[in-house]
Length: 223
Ligand code: DC
Image (tube, rainbow, N blue to C red; front, side):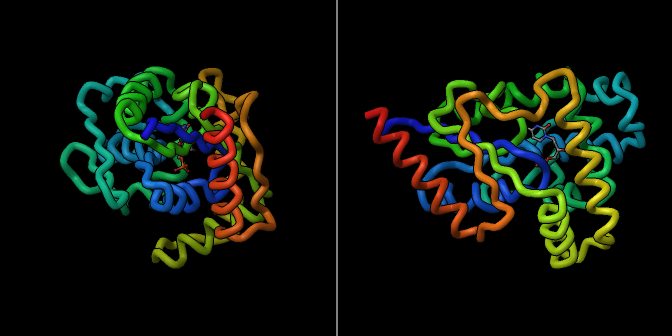
């Protein structure tokens, strides 16, 4: 079977990872969560006591940071399982700074492209269709209103036992939207050949079905 690459980009908390995981399972693709890699780097900066707004100091850590994405959504940073730690609010509040540093992006993009070399993948992030995998077979740009996204992220945090308030989450979503879409290198924006899906009023199953239909149609057109 031909190797397939599906890119899902969009703003924070638009439900990309939830649907990408399900689509990956149903289609037999490998799911790659690129946001988790920026989060792991952020976790490491915080662990080292480095100010995440200090670009030089954060980039100086590049040679010593090793990030691995394992099956079952396990994220390892320098040998430590950080899968839960990278979802905490201190990481969420700082990750957009880390993701705006060009040298860190370049280092992580090398890893991301390598992971897509041999397997069929569904990769989610902000710049997958525009920069990481510009030749992806299918490009989805998944959006939802700020309020919908903040409610979803708030409920997800509460269910995981992560302490937060709705207001805090809404502020964080807005702040990340701004930083992610205004950075100079590989900002959040739809690829010209992407298909937009607004999930504000859609269930998870509806989004999954829509994406699988798009993938099947695109692949049929190519064959
Ligand atoms: O999808 P997420 O919330 O886990 O992403 C965490 C942060 O990483 C988010 O603020 C944007 C950034 N990011 C990015 O800049 N490029 C990617 N490919 C993935 C995530």
